[in-house]
Length: 388
Image 1 (spheres, one colour):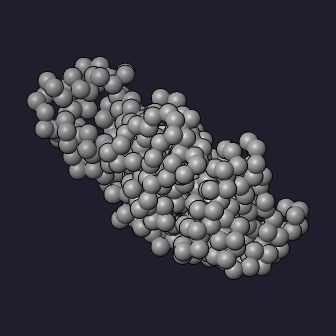
Image 2 (spheres, one colour):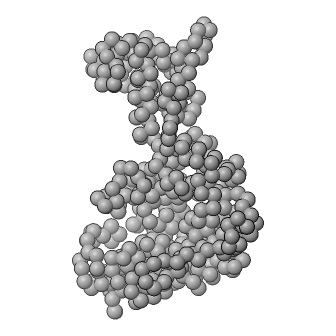
Image 3 (tube, rainbow, N blue to C red):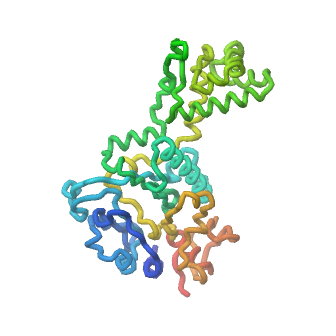
């Protein structure tokens, strides 16, 4: 961006911070703080190894410096401003998850629109929260959900039970959430039934076994409502299940629904094939493609909620759980400070415009746009500030 653009954005970011209510994270004085200022040229410069004592009053610091990006560390230290990481005295860290559209397997950033990317990221967020609540037992009060201001969401888990986990332990959390190297055969074990006979039983108490068990029950209910011929045909769609095995499984579903509900999968030679197929479906639908390095890094810097994302001009927005479904970043993350007036920008990258309501495209050249649209275009490198 050129000098006029840089100075305009820096000034308006400062105006935003002078009226914004920024709430520091817990133990703010034990965290490292960092920011990327507006600098000339194409590169960026990270300023870090600062404590809250170095910054002073946070709101005054942000209003004075008006950074392009603002961060704090997930970690808590004895000496957060020490320039040597090994000398900071690491004590604990939030368990942080990052969902970014760039890392979603079903999204091609070159093909998917910005709104499509954010919709996919929100879907992954909902799945992540379901895993964290149901499988790990984290309370809603111990999790902070934040729109990143860019193309995804952050979740900060501040349950004391995970604060001291090292990188290796956090990698195990990642592996679980993403179902990496999940032992599908291990979801079934042999347990004694009421007669003392060992039988194959699905681990239905919780975790991935419990999730597969839920799918098995739903699958069985669906088959019971079908005509027998249709049910047998559906069963035979599974690799390794022929007509004979399908009849055996269907018969068990019909005769012994209570046994299936209890996790009994003595359904004949196709039992393992059925459970594995359902397990693959569950994993594909319910895992969350989190960004692994963010969660495993116990010293990670993460965006400050209520700061402005310098690559979009949108607010890094904290969200209550009941707000997630209806949250629209292109409506709800626009700073109020940037509403209510038009400015001139010189559009260098014309095309789709997700943030302007009814206006879906922007043409090249000097254009009069709502200020928040202009800030968005300038922050994303699609326009420069024109002379008024």
